[in-house]
Image (cartoon, rainbow, N blue to C red):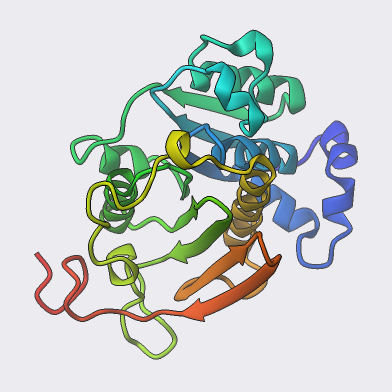
Length: 259
């Protein structure tokens, strides 16, 4: 898949990068990425994937834009209030990069539709705001044999990791699943919602941009990925830390007693 003269100029700063170059930019153009959620994390993620030249971006969200979203969901504007988020995101991408195709999916992911949807894309990037959706997406990606970049926001903290549970690691052991990292969701009410606890808009931007960076690295294939590593950001101390996590043989997806 060749790049047009306009694309060569648009992506010139990528093409001169030693770890991307023309071949890497062509990989981005061919890539199909499924973004789950067009909110605080998904908004900057979609923008940077589109600017980078990812050829097709699927956007899953069943919500409409509200005024309180605009403090952090930067892909939407004041005039978009009341519009479906998937439509607003598609319009923003069209303004940013006409070489990118957006496939809007105005729906809520469930166990019944997630696997078939994930199978249509090369990579999934989950910016959803609840554990139920995160488990649904991660299980679907495992069954569809697709890599997953997943992030989450707290009040002043964020986390990011990559899941390739359908593959084995260099030591021959299975890669960890999302359920190895979080075997069970927190009890109801233990984690306050964004509306209850608030969220720092710029923090959502940082974590969404990191999601885009990790997704681009997965597509192009450079650097050390976050498989088996959880990146944590504390915005109060402005500190990044990375902790390792491993395959749990008791996990229900690729554990010894998988069902």
